[in-house]
Length: 142
Image 1 (cartoon, rainbow, N blue to C red):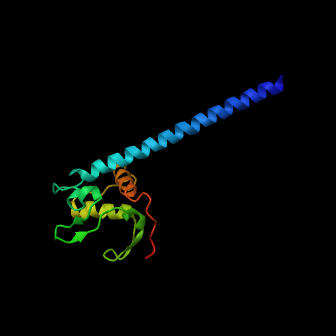
Image 2 (cartoon, one colour):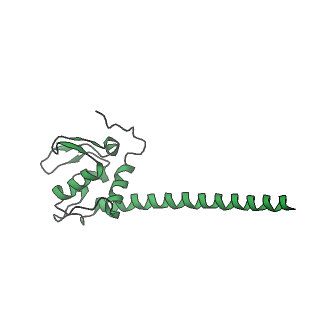
Image 3 (cartoon, rainbow, N blue to C red):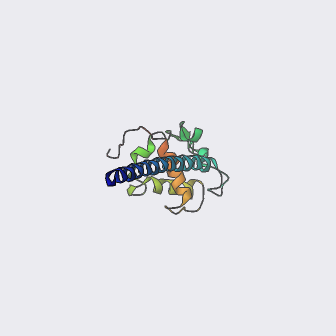
């Protein structure tokens, strides 16, 4: 009789573990999808700066198309860009992360306030930008 009870408890434990793993996977997928969606919304929003511009002022098509700086200089799409960070930035004179680049764009191009690196807005923006690199080969050494 003891063997049957232990087997039943083990089977129930395995079922509970499987349920927890499934719920955890669904939760993490939903959390990532929400972060990416929120990042896309922020990317298109003028709320990050004080000039009435959004990230899409320069990075057209949500970053999926070639863009243009205010001085008329063409810039590449952001597809695959996250896979190149961290990298050396000549202007800064040191290696920067994607978060640092986002912060630079907000402060300099949009004339906005720095976002804390662990803020939900920064996490959302970086999640969105990283989603544009899904499937891209990481290329940080050039």
